[in-house]
Image 1 (cartoon, rainbow, N blue to C red):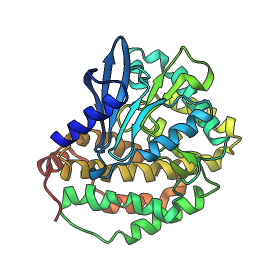
Image 2 (image 1 turned 90 degrees about the vertical axis):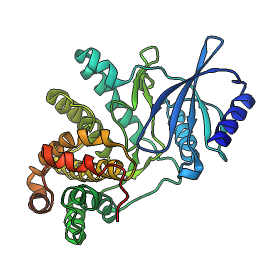
Image 3 (image 1 turned 120 degrees about the vertical axis):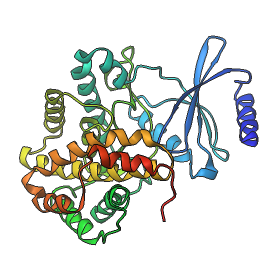
Image 4 (image 1 turned 45 degrees about the horizontal axis):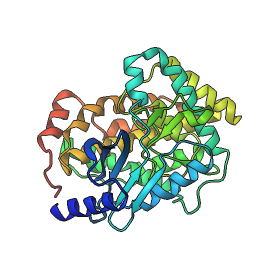
Length: 337
């Protein structure tokens, strides 16, 4: 840690920010962390992404430049040290969608409409070059963590994930496996900032997009509307989906099936990720979010196109009762066998 602090200080010195006041701003499910720097009345954000913990700032830089070229508001990059995992970024402020809607729920429709317009702009242009392109089998495999971690944390049993992966893969191939677009993946209210002083799609500040890849048009919409961390009003969800489908010229019935399939995949993956974050990384706070994600999964599974997946999930996945959530918490930070 002292070596990392020394490297951080050297980076800030080279960037002209030596001696700046530093205050912790945010951390997330990865090893990255963010500090706000203040110096001479100006602010900036320091991203610390340790390479020895699997982090790489390169994708963030590449995606940020692509988004900016489209007229979208990714943070400007002031200075960078890719070898040691440091970025000095433009400070876009504190007006996260999540914070603003908590303070004033009446602003939710305006914010979510603006977020849809960003997705439409993003998807109407060619993706950034070199993005990963996963197929239906890959997406189904990613969701199998629901069995590997969520189910295991509750039952202490391992099961063959093959039938689960095959069933989900079939649903995705049938309903959500068309032409790819660029998706940001973690497109939700805690990664979106309101910048009303800017115009059009630039009013939405974008954060945490380094995992961008190729995917289906509805994926980021699901991420926005089926937020693991907050409840989006049903009327706002409906208006948001309708605005997106109208702008993209999507047929209602087909898009509803795609949306449900993508939503189920995402919810299943998050169930497993949240359990793993507790068991392996010692982050029990995510366990409290599991019931919301479970409810989102059940809503998606109601779609007739997912009947087979619904039956299978009912058979292999236990619902998150209070006692089962406590069981997950009790194993926090214990390494898996």
